[in-house]
Each structure stands twice: as structure tokens, then as C-alpha cells.
Image (cartoon, rainbow, N blue to C red; front, side, top):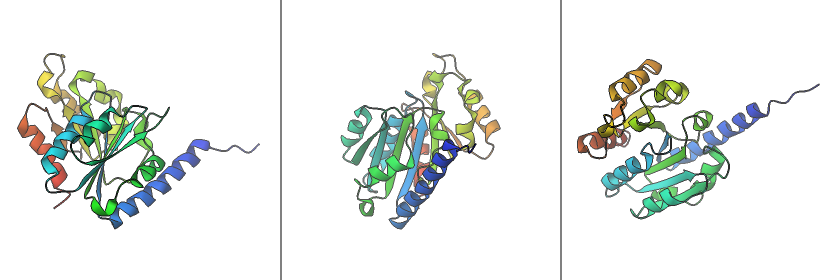
Length: 215
């Protein structure tokens, strides 16, 4: 009996397409960030803050991934940047094919930064490369300070980790320092930012991280 490993074939096809996406982005000198995190972690707000800080100096586009809704996409459109809503249907993550189709609706020659907001999930996006330059994982203190150790792979495979909404940590009985330490145990080389939309200094550090790739 011949057994076909469907999952292996799917991942191989996705990785090949992700490589093709990356080549296209490199050709057009587009810096792409895949921003992952659970629903309510604050991904959309962090992208909005980055757009507001950078849109006068850089040409920005957004791929807003979601299962069905276009609410996040409308928030980005209001900021005056090119936005494509990538609805995944039943899938809990974006894949390279969806990103490829979305990029067909973006003028990459007129884009410097591409934010890819992944579907709200800490598990499904882990294995799916999209062609991005940088993978960012956002986790909120409201998810509990044990959530990092419950989802190790996304922190091991990301380039930046953000512990968000630290201003409400006492109210939700979470310790941001513990979360940061847990991330660093899983991935000693990863930079970790502690952020809150109410703390301008922390948001500026997020913006500076993005700009470090654009210099």
C-alpha cells in the first residue's frame, strides 16, 4: 500500500510559493512583516500606530487576514494606506497562496512596507511561511502570563516578540516580566518588547524596530 503524506506535500508547496513571494518582494524592495497573535492581543492597534508614525516617510500597504470579517481592513483603509482583506474562510491562518493573491492587488513598485496581519491564532500560523522578511508574535497580558509556555513554537520561530497591554497587567493578575523571561527561555536570541498604546515610549521602540530594517 502506498501512503501519501498530504500534510508534507501541502507544506512543501506552501514553502515553495513563499519563496516565490519573497523573491517578488525583494525584487520590488518591499520590507514585509508577518504579524501574528491571538484575537485581542492588539495586533491591529500596533499596526495602526506604525502606520501613523511612518506613512509620511514610507509607502505602506496592508494585507489584513481574517476568517470572514473585514473590520480590521477598514481600520487600516481609514488611515489612507492600500489595504487588501484576505479572508481565509474556515482556515485559522494565512498561507503563501492567499498572500500571493493579495499582492496582485497591491502595487509593489509603489510600496516600501507591507504589513501582513495574520489571523488571530497562536498555533495555526506557525508552520506557514508567507514570504515575509520578519515574523512578529504579539501576546497580551490579558491572555494570562502562562500563555507563552502554552504556545512555545510560535515564539521559537519568530524574530520579534511583543508583550502588549502591559498597563493592565495588575488588573488581569499577569506578570509581564515573567512572560518576557518565558519567551527568552524558549528563544534566547529573540528581542522582546513590552508595549502599551498608552505608553508612547514603548510604542516608539516598536517603531524603531521597524525602522532598523529600513535604514
